[in-house]
Length: 179
Image 1 (cartoon, rainbow, N blue to C red):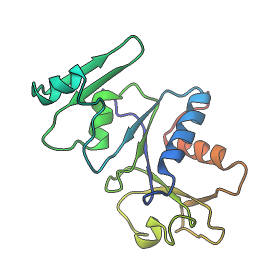
Image 2 (cartoon, one colour; image 1 turned 90 degrees about the vertical axis):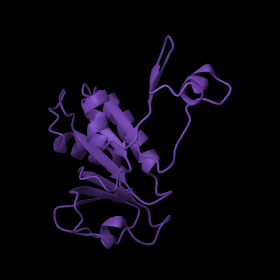
Image 3 (cartoon, rainbow, N blue to C red; image 1 turned 135 degrees about the vertical axis):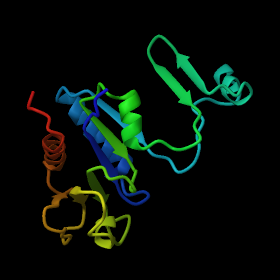
């Protein structure tokens, strides 16, 4: 299995991470890329309500894995004792992706793009940890006065072409050849 290129989209709560991941994924798909995403959650989740058979398979039957299959999609719920890294998840389940976008995973060493909206928070993550362990590719921001450390692009949401600029950066950093 090959490790697909990966980029983490990070930011504080309610800063716009999901919106940025969705916009990036849609534009990468429009450009002909096979995009896959991983969303990090800090608490457990259920894909189906307690009244479904698959819920019962998992909770009452204690199945280690439950697959849900329908004519148009497939889901696999895997029970684990230790959380996998985004790299391990991508290697096991997404090796055929052109690019994997990860929402969250601030503690990972993945190349990252931070969404920082002054309208949501007074400071960015990179401002508090400028020498963090993971390489920053860019900060996407609504703060006209924001500056980043050397080598980190600042992409302004006020710029009409901001999304294309971010996607171009993601494609270059992932080593994706033009289509």
